[in-house]
Length: 287
Image (cartoon, rainbow, N blue to C red):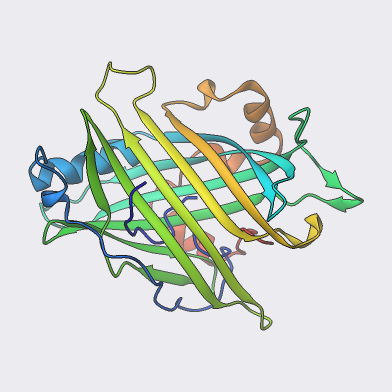
């Protein structure tokens, strides 16, 4: 995506779900207001609704399926493949102008770099999938910009990350690009420091113009998890939206049904979120 800020979106997003306290401010480049995104920019409400409905639908659950790879840095050696998905639903407010609430959870796992088989161990170590039990993302349109605030983690380490800049929207012909780079640098429990760069590029195409009008490219530069030997790596995933888990690649669906069934459905409501916050967080990137 082009330079913009949507902290911890995601995706796929920020530190582990169990990170402590409120995260410090994330250094971010300035965004361009959606209303000024290009000569053919749409009115603010249209941009906002386009983003919300593309990312998380209109109420019924949607899923983003991801496939990609992990490369050693700086050698470029392909260490692993990677597959995963997130499941999302949107809660629209009763009153116009109030925040829109995005409920999501996501999970990713590592695969053999040659065969694509999902790994359960590596060099005698158990492979630990990435697994966020939930994220709550609150969106608002302010002064022509889309802002997001993310809530994640489990008590007593519930993390809230607020945007300091808005998402940048850009028109590419008849398509739109929404960009969110993240520059992450904050302490973790135990004295470690979380340092990573991530970038999300969502591409939204007109209905009927391509077979899948909702697409995303994600990159990450950061630490490998301890079971993988540590060190720096480049992650790259390509994602697309599906309306049902039945449209998942068969191997991914089989893994999810056997190992991560909860992740096939987004959180139902805030009552479920509060219950999850009283439990334990899942492993995040670099764990």
